Image (tube, rainbow, N blue to C red; front, side, top):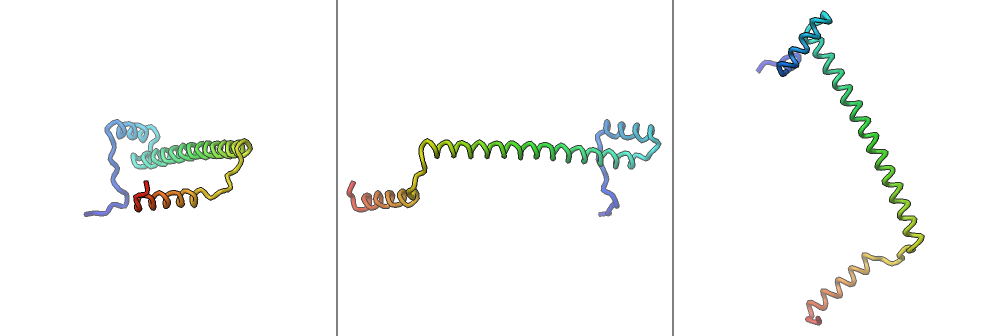
Length: 105
């Protein structure tokens, strides 16, 4: 298989016609126009991606702020449970299992 210095580019007929028209108008080669169009397209996609990710970061920050305010509100109205929930549930489950094993239902 032959290695090309540049990989071949497959275009739709309409894309090829548009590039050829631009190349003719600007007195450039088809390759020069194609390189410029791809460069501009990639820049546009990157800018769009950066803008979308920036909006997502702001939304995430707002959600975190809302959660923090809800936690503070719950803490004020209900207080904080000082027990060890995991240990309590584990102990309760072990007692249930012991009753099942010894038929003390």
